[in-house]
Image (cartoon, rainbow, N blue to C red; front, side, top):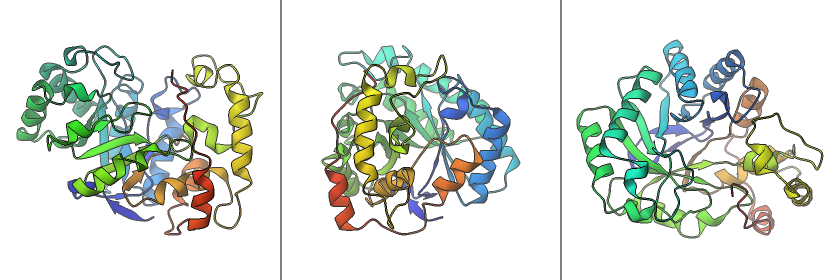
Length: 322
């Protein structure tokens, strides 16, 4: 496993992190707690040192599993979690008042709940799970961040940037209170490279790359005939003719497989890791097989400029979360 520094936090984290949404037991169907725990342990055994969870993942269930895991390990594991918006609307809609999403009391109370779920005295990285840069100049979130830091309950703060809105956070970062950004970054959505990554390199802000597989599209597992269990959010994400379009585009990318990357998941992760602005990439992992495959990508090898140039042609402006 290779390691990178998470921006100005100074934390040294594995470049493959653990996205813990899927183990929360809601929206992603099929998660089994026992298998999730085995996957977490396997990941740590392979050198993984960064886990990203959220209070909203299974309404605390993901955090609680991570808390159990931490109690069973002696390793130093960096844990990031997130505060959901009060109105439970993702992403934050333009014009939404800050009070609908984050008040001072709500930020404090949510953090206290996460501390109990995780069974820790302090959270390494606390993130706001949605954001609107119209809120950047308002005081509620700033006062809450200050209080939690003074109390020693949170070490660092970040923002999980709204879906496909890579520049929606730059005003918040200008306050000097944001240590990390979590952003969608993959072969299809390459927009963070334009403004966000150069900004973060200049300001030494850590980047957590999420959705590297585009919710499964870039694993090659989505075909026109793919079906999902009832309650799985991907029924909506891949609704209508979207599966056919994904299947067509992914088959084009498959032609680039070879000695630099033998599978689509490997290629997808190596693409995310090619940019030094990225501190860690967090694929979702719910079983040991996927843990081993994903962690195995962290071997120090880089994609060639030639292959990266070909991958650039597969950028795709879309928003399946709508």
